[in-house]
Image (tube, rainbow, N blue to C red; front, side, top):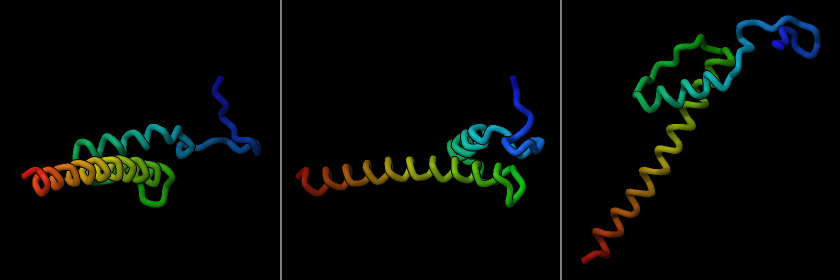
Length: 79
C-alpha cells in the first residue's frame, strides 16, 4: 500500500518522489553527454540528478586515470 503521508502526518508532495530515479537519470545523462539538469534549481531532484551525474563522472575519471597510467608505463618501460 502506498503511504501518502510522512511520519509527521504531513501529505507528501511531488518533490518526495523516489530519488533513485533522478540519480539514475543523472548517470544516464553523463553516459549520453547531456550536460543540462532538467530539474528546477534548489530542489532535491536537482541535487540527486547532479549527484548521479557526478558519480558517473568520478567512475569514468578513475577508469581514464587507470588506463592512462597503464599506457604510460608500457611506452616508457616497454622498450
